[in-house]
Image (cartoon, rainbow, N blue to C red; front, side, top):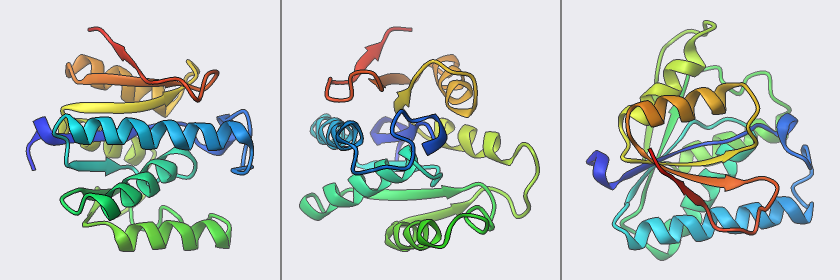
Length: 177
C-alpha cells in the first residue's frame, strides 16, 4: 500500500481521557462516532490502508472503527503495529482479549521490535508515520506520546486531522503546515 492511500492514527490512552475507562460515557460514544465519520470521509478520498499502534484507549477505538468500515468496504485493510510482542501482557484480562481479537482481525500484524525498551513506543509511532500520508489524531494538547507523534507527523509533512476531545461530535480540524 502506498503512503498516499495510507492513514495512521494517534490518540490518548484511557488515563488521559475525560471519561477514563468508561466507554459507555456519551462523550466516548460521540468520539467513536466522530472517528467512524472521519474514516468514512478518508475512504471517500481514496484511503484504503489504516495503521493502528494497538494501545489501550483511542488506538483500539480507531482499529475497531476500521474493522467496522471494512465490513461495508472490503477493500479496506488494517495493520496493527505492535511495539513489541508483550505489549498487552500486563493489561487487565478483558483488555488483553480485546487487543488479541482486534489483532487477529488485522490484515497485517507488524512487530516493530522483539524486546521492550524505553524507546519502543516511539519507534512504533515513527513506523506508523513513516508509512502514511495522513494522520488522524485525538489530542488534548498534553505532553506525551500523542504529542510526540503529531510533531513527528508535522515534521514529515503529513496531512493532520485533529479530533478535539472537548468537542467529540465535531468534525476533525485539518492542521495547516
